[in-house]
Length: 388
Image (cartoon, rainbow, N blue to C red):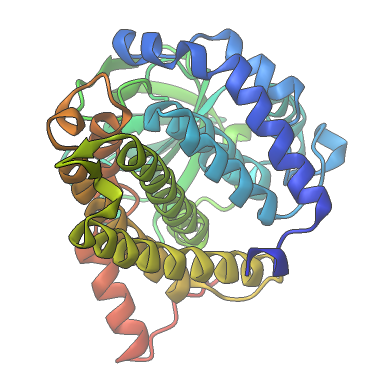
């Protein structure tokens, strides 16, 4: 089925990316997991290979490709055995940079998007707050205009790349009203006075620097407002589909890798005089899990393909994340069981993969929120198209 969506150029790209990751990333992920952040040099190495610019315009150093390359990028990142490293990479390339490319002015793109593609600058997207996650409209961070600047006050939390990034894409209330048409998106330099960040200690994704960020009277020039001063909410909603699809792709790729590893182990492990992959109960469990993974993978491919055609895929992207992350959690739970005591050991990759997988049903919109979004679409016939 995948050959309907990927050609020889895609496969060549996949092979090159896999080789690069094996050489430049895999040998270091254990260290990065322990220290809680990745080596800064890898950003420029990734940038030099063009991995941050795949879907961005050539005028800024990008390659002008489509999101089928994004799918491959996310799939291969899952194979390095570090959800935190993968998250740091795609949060930069497809959360921060997506908004910068879509809403940023030409001047901002020339300065920040070009440097982001090369890996010289790293970005993060700041939406979630300590008192509210999926309810974007209820945020409390404010941006009050003062002459040729905005004054930003508030806080954000659970921000991937939130500690070591060079710039922050921040959504804030701009007119004091508690409604959707009262938000703007701003690009804030890390070194701006009044910006502070503290690192969070997480169950998984330990190689990524997830932070809580405070804005205390941060002065941001009006030229760093991205798009309309009131339409920030709709910009965020418009980009959520990509984030959710990426998390769905991450989940199916993580599941595939876990099953591959588990089947290899089962072929090497013996009990009662035979390989454990010859026990019917385990064979059938693998058969069921492989079926579920194959279904979500091909659904995700089809959704990504439709997104590349410019089609409206809010429902499908939400379904992708909802079901794919659910299946991934199930797969990792079962894989640990099939490895027995070894699955519980940190020396084996399944333990870390299980920890990393657990965030899938939480980040980027919880499963509970996604169910309500899907219900509104299929029952109430609601459309989440932007008003822009």
